[in-house]
Length: 113
Length: 116
Image (cartoon, chains in turn green, blue):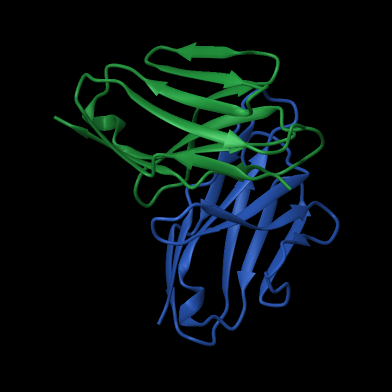
């Protein structure tokens, strides 16, 4: 089955700096790669996703890149703000039928004011 | 769109009792829902896939008799933790995918279960 690895496990950045979180996956059949933000005591919230037919996607301060050949994808957050502090999870799925998501281990991002 | 409602958000129960958690898709029909368990500072671990009108598919190591799943309608799946013990204390999260939507999987807000 799919194995998703995520690095780093913790990340601290100064407010205004950029943050990058990287994930790798093992199953070449995976074609859907979402990123979730989880705040304490809450369920994960989708922040951005990318499908395998696209190499990069951007939504305001958040961007995701995908390298299908190398089987890795990354989350980029620019101009970080204290409210960006949370745990971020990457995931991968073969989105045919109702296949479940395989999650990375999470990155705790702390933005220092 | 694509809202998933999960209740209760928090529950405390005594050892040996059963607890039911509900997961509802509010504005779409979900033939499949997923139940996850999350321990503190860890990732989400898939417990089972809930299929409307049929039996749930459980992941290896998850006791089907302990974690009863019922998906009786296209908008509701329930997880019942039977004869709960302190080691069942955890954060339980459901998710569903709107087949007609573009937003992928939507998660509920989670249920913090504490067994005393």
